[in-house]
Length: 92
Image (cartoon, rainbow, N blue to C red; front, side, top):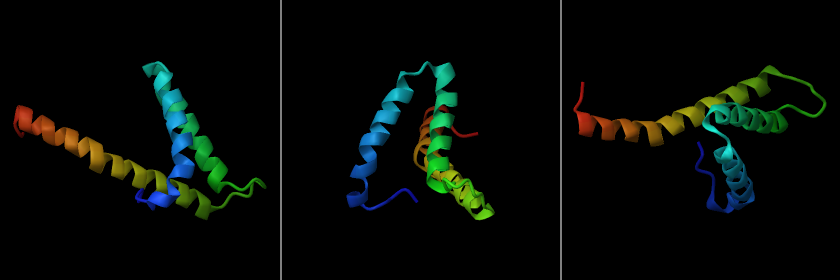
């Protein structure tokens, strides 16, 4: 879950803001690829040891982190967007 303590956030927030700014400057047709690159490299550097020793446990941790981030994004942003569209255009 992304709700880490407020005290842990500042060490990430400056770098996240800079990465977001750089990605936002990319044309829309490049943003997906650039975003994928950034996310992949962050996860690689955090979970795959410099020795290159791969493990199923590391891969499972990465996949679960991505899945939980995807679900949180859907819960917080997409569902709210869909609720507004239902209110505007009526339900099915």
